[in-house]
Image 1 (tube, one colour):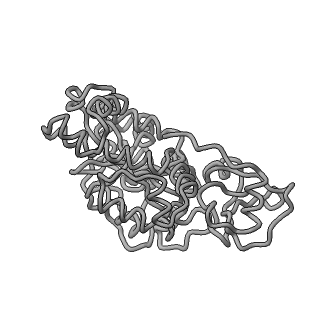
Image 2 (image 1 turned 90 degrees about the horizontal axis):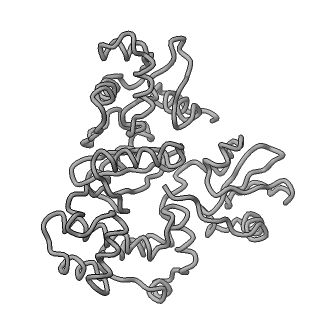
Length: 355
């Protein structure tokens, strides 16, 4: 996962915060020292003195610094949903994936290129034009793996030359076009949730990763898939990724208790055994690490089981949040105990309270 882009200047951010400028949604959150709360740039609450405000690029950074989310503007709720001003542009890009957009095209569509760049950098670590190019490259990579020729794939991806296409593919996959056929392409998309954005990665058959975007181990999770599958990651969606995004939305709305999207969770035999056991923990219940160890036939290996639970790459979907300590306390959740508390409250039929 790429680092967040640099923040705008403090003068710019404070003015945007005072003016409730929607263009800065997703660019920063404003944290108020005197209240210990952080807000969206568009929060309708009364604005504090400038000396009392500090800024973070992401909600997770503000949470890590000890701030609580504002109950009025709810900065964790669907923070990465597509704004109305951008949706027509994305629909046009989806209708013609091979089109090469320019800044003039963006202006012609009524979108400020700088605004689009800020939005995409905040969510994908790249500009809008870079996002489209990476997506075209991913589509071309998939065609090559299916047996298409390099020249044909380069032309369909709208690259200027075959050599330029080969170099771009080599940078993305670490292989020549011929060697790239051995790599496993996974599409990566973000989806909103009340607990902050989730990253979802999958191919045309299954989903391999669902993880909170600010989890410290996210890069290691991607690296593990790269090592085990020879995976290479491109922005975009597949049918399983789209299906998972819909199921996650239904789950957080309290309308879904069991995920049905096909899953893959390659790991060691021990890891896979533990992860399969997680799927048997019913919605609305909890179990201890010791109980999970007994279910896997490893009574004396509670610590090893706990380690495998923490290495789960399918947050929420493989319900490691349902595993608690021997005394019933909430322990050991990579996404943060505040998220674990929220998920258990949601599944228990209670209104999730303050986090």
